[in-house]
Length: 471
Ligand code: UDX
Image 1: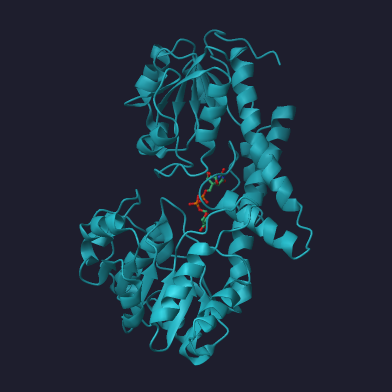
Image 2: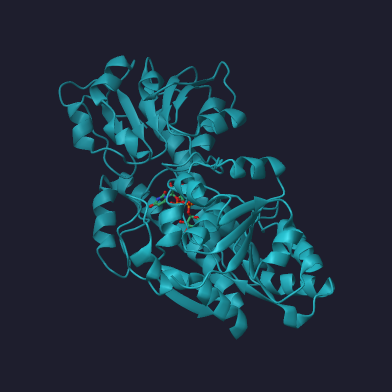
């Protein structure tokens, strides 16, 4: 394995914590800094605080050894060769990214820097942020030859973050200095030279892939734009297939067949062509808005992104309409809801379309009985239990005595539900699936009226329990 580098990661959220443990796994010495004392205490005790596969194992392997947790950024700065900034960049009211945490971290680093150090932007930031960090450092009296600012965007997905970090398609390093580029090259050498894949004491089940990722060097500005443009493009791809699914619904075509046919063209590719209730999460909605706002500020017409956002918002309105079309009226209806997280295999509810839909349906007068395998605790902080909201202990309890069951998050475990058992306890056998988790023919054979996205509704084979909707 290549030589170890002393790294500091500032921020222990999804990106920061995953990066920190993965750098340790790659053989580096890591200090993870967070100003939240409670978080640091929990992490020192081995509690990950977020639901992320393989994170507990890696934290258990390296905590208090290759990876230390502290609140003191000054000490971490003095001890490190490279400092990765992975603090939050929340969305401000105008849509652009609020960079005040990044600025505060840069100023604090500047006050303690005593030798050459690379400052790395890992948070998703708009183009020009590296310039602002440089200016902040200089304004705080740091000589130009004592630091470089590099952009090294992260492309990990929640739920598969650790595997994505250690087995990426590409590693992008935006550096305007050879010295800084060389240090980043060394940090990622275990992956880009492949030694990690040969020697690592791999975690069982993580990834069989040993393909060496491509290391791409660009200018800092290009790297900043690569991150925003990639996320905005993926969001666009999802909105595109959502719009196509609406067209399929209007023509009785099947979007699954259409997406398959499109995806076989290698120029298009099969991924991110799953229609649903719209994209959510902590990245896509925020990054599309921030990228649009960057374009606005630069006087560049990127109204395509406004359309992407419109399609995404409308997808939820259409889903409510589908529920109404299946049930006639909504007031007083009891609905089972499976899934509250913004996607499967995570407990994250930030910008979750499922949460938004539950709120929309409650506003229409429905009462909800919801189940999510991991996100209920977080959801209850946003929508507390009450006359219109109940949290169920499992999917069967959520379905019991309901007028319809809705699937709002694509948790893999929902595929293995006992359909006969679900059906038997429901008032009406109507399943409205916002994630296309089931085969319509199978649902028909289980006597469900099955409404999904961009595919013809299927009806019970034995008897017509519910007539086609009159819209
Ligand atoms: C995303 C990017 O994928 C990742 O590269 C970036 O670093 C952070 O943002 P994440 O938000 O964790 O990752 O989830 P992702 O799996 O990309 O899903 C985002 C949203 O799009 C979810 O709401 C998901 O349900 C939805 N989605 C995804 C679809 O509706 N259809 C698809 O085909 C794919």
